[in-house]
Amino acid sequence: MIGRRRMPDPARTELNLTSMIDVVFQLLIYFIVGTTFAMGEQSYRMDLPEREGGAEVDPLELDDEPIIVQVLGGGRIRIPGPWNAPVHVDGLESFLESQRSDRGGIIELDAPIRIKPRSRVSWQDAVQAFNAAVAAGYQTVGFDESID
Amino acid sequence: MSIASRLGVGRPVRTGANLTPMIDMTFLLVVFFILVSRITSVEQVPLDLPSPSNPAANPAPEAPRLVANVPADEEGEAIAVLLDQRSYRLDESGLDDFTRTVAGRLEAIPELQVNLRADRRIPYEIVEPVMDALARAGALAGRPEGVRVNLVIQTEERGEDT
Image (cartoon, rainbow over all chains, first blue to last red; front, side):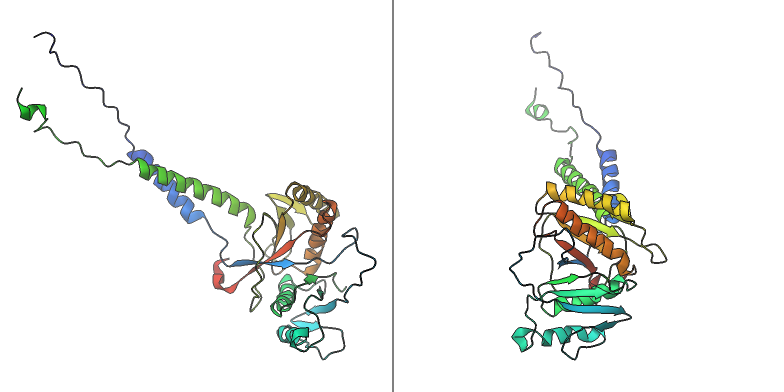
């Protein structure tokens, strides 16, 4: 029979994907190993003091007198005021906490606290004092101009 | 033609796993890691962050952020401010340039915050002008409440990874 001739199979085209998969896995491993995530980093909110040309100030509103924490370097601090303040940064957190108005002290929780380091004090020491004030529970902690 | 030959009995069987989903997933992973490594290389300049003992838990809220890096060289001296792969000198003109760039970004995205990553060894007299520049940028961008600046510190669980 002439009409029963078999049709040829449709051509089977297949890409060989093996080498591509190899390369893609190599890339994947490279990027997994090469990527570092910022684990263990934390960021603090900071309030910048008002500088010249900064925010408008309401002339009728009385500003709270800021609590100044002077950072002198080597862990030494000074807090001018009518109290027996610690001279080392280790005692800063417990002192500020004991002075909170809700713990029987005289400093309001939203009173501005200004960290005022000396100009050659390292950033580590400045942040240490800043951290102590934040850990004591105050809401408005910021940096001020350096002492000298 | 017999039934057996019509069913193809006796021919070698073609077995093969369908690799398409695996290739899809692998490509997605590759793209993810390429993008992440690009972002972290811009924002996470390797530097020695300050690590206060007993860090207070006061994390900044999630928001669009701009990361300003102040790295130090081997002697602990600051070199420049890095922002978006650009380096700004720490003198007056460099910081003016920095201020204008930050102000432009603040105008474009209203809720933008600035993360300040500074090396622990550099003195405060270097960081202070940078913070001043950020405050000026907030004023320049017309933000009455100022710009929100976050300090980035190192918590202890990371150890000597940096």
